[in-house]
Length: 101
Image (cartoon, rainbow, N blue to C red; front, side, top):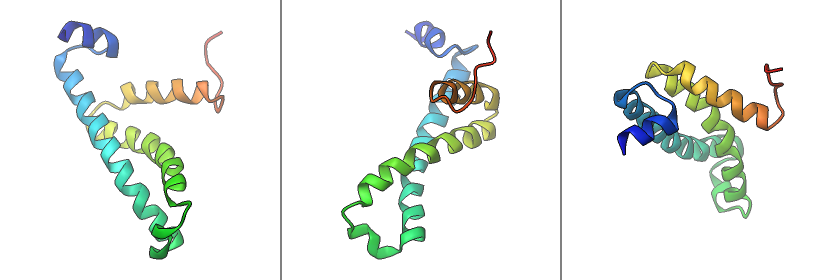
């Protein structure tokens, strides 16, 4: 099972896989928490009762997650791994061009 996960995530060893899972977990949790506080700081405390609160929060979580993934990944020494993931996402979204010919 470990070897299959190592192949799927394209990592060198099991320790790197554990670090990557930790980064994904921290980043996901942190982006959800920060999304709330960003909306409160921009729109104020009363916005929590607005009909569009959850819609905007869900939309906001995606870019926050992408930025945090790079930052947290770098803090754990995995910048290159997560930057490659980010490049693939940005290419699929057509925000950057592929460097492949």
